[in-house]
Image 1 (tube, helix red, strand yellow):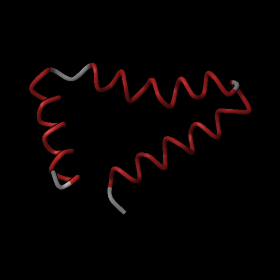
Image 2 (cartoon, helix red, strand yellow):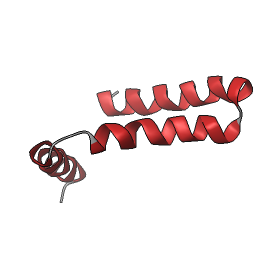
Image 3 (cartoon, rainbow, N blue to C red):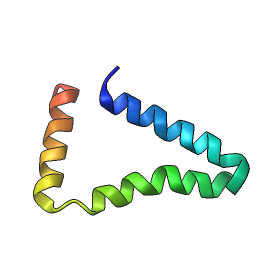
Image 4 (cartoon, helix red, strand yellow):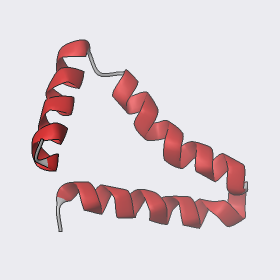
Length: 60
């Protein structure tokens, strides 16, 4: 299992565990918002490197 898959599974698990306690919409916001904020905190060079690596993994 790749590290990216482990992160995705962990995020889904956290979202499912949070859902009964904080509600569906807030847990969805946490699951989607945390990675989005983390991406936006990267500087432009790191974002380019991340996109380049992602494209290579997809075989483009």
